[in-house]
Image (cartoon, rainbow, N blue to C red; front, side):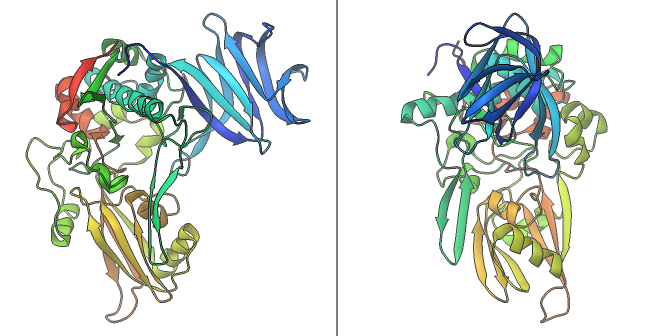
Length: 444
């Protein structure tokens, strides 16, 4: 395990036609030339050309690195956040640390931020959670985010790999099972969006509490079996967290077990009858909250647009569902006859779903692929029951999905942890609630 703070590279965006922004203070080019102000970087004659706001050429090459002096920052224009999610949008974002601009083989531009882990975490905490969230939640999130990040770096170092396939699984004509790793970046350690961890720089104002939370927990990690924990987290587990194997590779991870997100024990889901009873009710749980004060403290502004995260309903006509499946899966099922859950995890999330159509039948998994296939963007989660409507013996005219939770549900439940913190539960107890067999250890 590490004994010092790592320096990491964060991909702010990849494969953009150009990079535009502003250097807020003095930055040095590799030849020590000082530059500042508005800039753009576009491909030209097989190289990346950096120009000032007035059009003057500042530098060119396959890669351009800009190193800040003092407390200088940089702003990038029109950074896409929430990629492929229901709240996707563009924002101008400001960052600390160095800026690297790369020319890709296809003539597009990648923008990378270099920062220390602790500096990076200040932004992650303020981006994933509201800066006004309870301090104990921010401290718990700092420990979780730090552990996930460095566990990933340690794994890359151990295997000698800096990248891997984004999509893994097994596919046949009858069954398509896919899951998505977080280690598919070739030129940087992590991306800045939900695929890795939200990292919106200084755009989401880094509050004194976020700084305090990172400082208080500096170098503190979740550890299990002599290794840093791959500490996953999601917005709302829906009352019970999910197994690692339900979302990713089919292996058991001891500290990513399924736990009840409540002071009382809710049994795991083991049947379709239990799933329907669980999902169609509103059992007591930490993440079962409608307290506007807590949610405003916890959720960034764009997340506050989602209010039905604990229990939700989506309804499609036959024509709507057929069109969505055709577009999202690339397969023509014809008239949709049935959606049949074949395997669920203990939180009620569907791991394998059979889609029966008039033209073909396919089993799809795992949870994220199911969510992608059944929505123009993403379903909140794969914990749902299907309620078809229509005449007996005929193909349903409408499919209503009643669901639970927001995200994959594995590990740390962000809204559940927020409620625990609001009740005065300390950060150490919060993380040990979700990562039951892990211990806390300060490594630097």
